[in-house]
Length: 188
Image 1 (cartoon, rainbow, N blue to C red):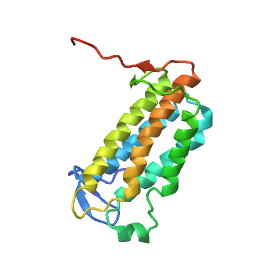
Image 2: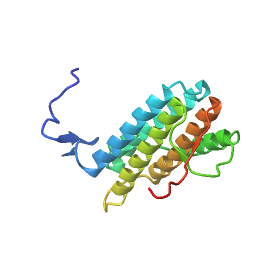
Image 3: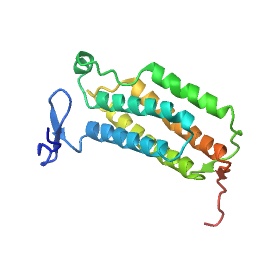
Image 4: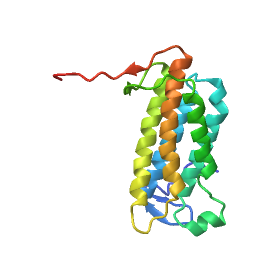
């Protein structure tokens, strides 16, 4: 099978279920941002991070793929018919457990921190900001009358950005790199 079909050359794409829409539609933007997020999670996972997080990060990437598939399938009947579940409550709970487990070993935050530190922490901070953008795109889509977005999608992305922040802090701590505190500048 060829990778190119030429069907999208005029700026349209197929949603799962057969509907053709413009590539600039909110739904396409939302699942595109989730796909970009998935790629950045992959970059962060490949950045030399804690090997004990490997399986967790693969699960996150799989959940993001499920979420994107759900977003690419606007008709709830099609999602049910083809078993496209999106993210589940258990996926959200897994992120909460990860956050709780990693935070238990971190110093309490007393100030805002700048994104950065070790290369792997910086990669997770980038993934976190891409996650927030994906979340905003899904929120925009969910706010359109007649659009169908599972509430677990929004909650998952919200929790994932928190988890990516904590993983970034974990990476700095694991590598003996201090988080960089934000210090407000006066007169800037």
